[in-house]
Amino acid sequence: MKYPFSYRRKMTSVLIVLLMTGMGFLTSCQQRSNSQRYNKIDYLLGLINKQYVDSVDIHDIIERAMPEILSELDPHSSYIPAEDLQQNNDELEGSFSGIGVEFTINKDTLHINGVIKGGPSEKVGIMPGDCIIKVDDSLFVGKVCTNHEAMKRLKGPQGSKVTLTVLRRSVPDLLTFEITRDRIPQHSIQTEYMITPEIGYIQIDRFARTTPIEMLTAIAKLNHQGAKSLIVDLRDNTGGYMESAVQMANEFLPEDAMIVFSQGRSYPRSEEYANGRGSSQKLPLAVLINEGSASASEIFSGAIQDNDRGLIIGRRSFGKGLVQQPIAFSDGSAIRLTVARYYTPSGRCIQRPYKDGQDMDYQLDLLHRYQNGEFFHKDSIKLNRDSVYYTVKGRKVYGGGGIMPDVFVPRDTTGVSTYLAEAINKGTIRQWAFGYTDNNRKTLTKYDNLVKMVQYLNTQSIVPRFVKYASQNGIKRRTILINKSYKLLRMNLYGAIIYNILGRQSYMAFINKTDDTVNRAIKELENKTTLEALANASNDD
Image 1 (cartoon, rainbow, N blue to C red):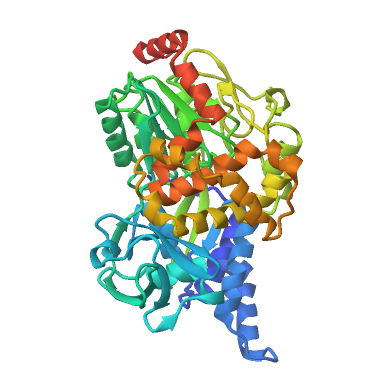
Image 2 (cartoon, one colour):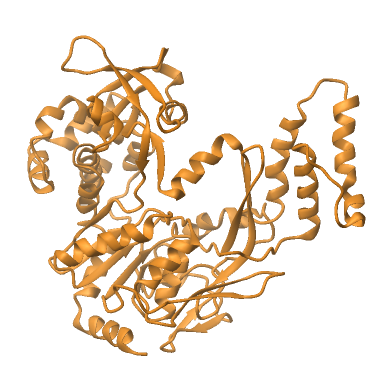
């Protein structure tokens, strides 16, 4: 889909001139008057290059100027240097080329958490628990061992080779593996399971190119297992491709239901409608959102809400309704330029207000929401009561920033303490859980499902062992606070161990058992009155 260019003419002219100058292809402009107005940028760069007292890197000046120029426009237009563009694209395209492992960096060493089934590393014999000591001929321990550097060294073109030197606990000598990199799928849906005998649960991390087909596959699996209703979890999903959100909404909406429309300064309004061929038009639906749900998540949620197709449960979403158009340059870099605003079917613009790209109130909005009590009390939400819209069934919904849920669920602070916060923020819980997993991997791998794993961990005095470790690593033992946070400490510690051994889906199934928003969704979908209302909405033309 093409979107209109709605941005400030002045700043755009500056940007275009600067880009064309820096990349060596400045040509005569079609509009001479505008070109002459901004030729002083070109002139300035020429002066610096020829007459400045010291030698300078003009390319570096331009690289640093690009983000500054775009920051004058809006909060979401951005510049992506060439070295970062591939990783940004990989996350949305749904795959990348690498060796196929999940890893954790602990104590300046890269530890393999998991090996992707059928991937390059599994084929050569890499195992969970292995520690990478060298990559090719270079040591990879100590300060050089960072997430950024690991991605840089382990990823690479498909078919290229990398040699890893690995330390394995059960083997006295170091092991060497030559791995041929291959395409590795990046799933945006890593969790789908039956949360009750009749309710399916799907968590979507982002809206990638492959997300719609992943969702169809997940729904088919859940239907086969007896799902009669569905929870779609979009909490902390920051968005992605608008087209993917449209395709997903299409699966749930009847023919001719509007999904979204976009509009800009110099391009006519563009609308998207459901084609009536969706596979789940009658399936009762609950969508979970929170303050971290943004962009494409809000398109999907807004379409479901405005068409009275399902329940939106949780807290007010982020409020990002600006559409970015990727524009690539010949040196491999790109910009993502805001070119339009999108609107829900009722006409709401989801984008919350901003002055310009450097509006500090906008940047600190989530903090202000927290301080104002919005995360905890529905009445604290500052809606624009003058910005009223109506769903298909005539319910009031409000514009002015984000999607307001139909069912509000406050953030639960029961059991939260400064001890717990310190243990999480310092990474001490993660470090201890990884060490415990690594030291007991042979025993833990005997417990191949969530129920057995939890039963085993219940016999291991996990919290007391962690508290002892924490006190030896800079976190003072505070008995009253530990007792207050005991259940949350246990949940976080168990969860980290479960993730390390059983993976993401088992981790989410464990966490969801005590999640208030998930449990409220289950309650609503098990309520006959709610189900009847949802069924009536989906049956109406």
